[in-house]
Amino acid sequence: MTENAAPIRRRIKSFVLRTGRMTDGQRRAYEINLAELGLQRSDGMQNFENTFGRVAPVVLEIGFGMGDSLAEMAANAPENDFIGVEVHTPGVGRLMYLVQDAGLKNVRTYEDDAVEVLAQCIPDNSLSRVQVYFPDPWHKARHHKRRLIQPQFVQALRSKLNVGGVLHLATDWENYAEHMMDVMSEAEGYSNMAGDRAYSPRPDYRPITKFEKRGERLGHGVWDLLFTKVS
Image 1 (tube, rainbow, N blue to C red):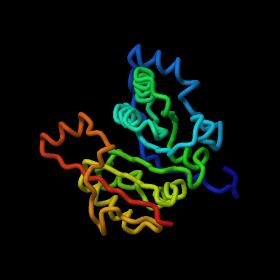
Image 2 (cartoon, rainbow, N blue to C red):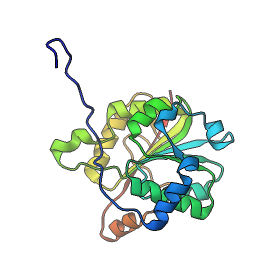
Image 3 (cartoon, helix red, strand yellow):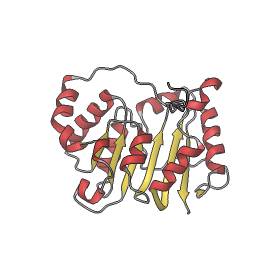
C-alpha cells in the first residue's frame, strides 16, 4: 500500500461457505439446467419479462438452503415467478433437481452473494415479495454484526420492492426475532402488517420445513415478520 492509498474496507460477510457434496442426481440436474435456470451476476440488470417469458409478480428468496420450500412454493403458486439466491452449490443443485423433477417453469436461481445480486441485477420497484427464512442467527453477541438483517440491508430490499410489496422474515431464534423486530420497527418506508411490534402468523404460502416441524416437537418457537413497503 502506498503512503496515500486509502485502506481497503472489506464488507462483513453474513454467511460462511460450507463444504458439501451433491448427489449424482443433483449434479446432473445442475449441469443440465444451469444454462436455463441459472442466472449470472455478470449478465447485469434483469428484465424479468425476458427472463421468464411473461409478465407476472416476482418473488425473491434469499438463502433458500436446499430448495425444498422454494420449489414447493413455486409449484403451489404458478401465477408467480420465483428467483432464489444461495451461495452453497449443493443447495443450488438440489433446487435444480426439484425444479426439473416437478417440471416447473417459474423458478430461476443465482449462486451468488445476495448483496451483490441486489445491487447489480434486481431492478428497483420490481418485486412483489422478498423472503428471508431462517438466516444464520450468529447467536454469539460478538457475531451479531454479521447478521443479514440490518438497517442498511432492509433499505436495499425496500428499494427493490414495489409499493405494497412485502418483506417476509422468519427465524427460530427468539433473540434474532427481537433483533429483526427492532430493525424493522425503525425502518423508514415499511409498515408492520400485524400491527406495532407484533409478529405475524405463518402465511399459508410458507411451507413448514422438516427442520421446523422437528423444532416445534421440541418446543422451539418460530417467529414470522411481515412488513409491507408503504413508500
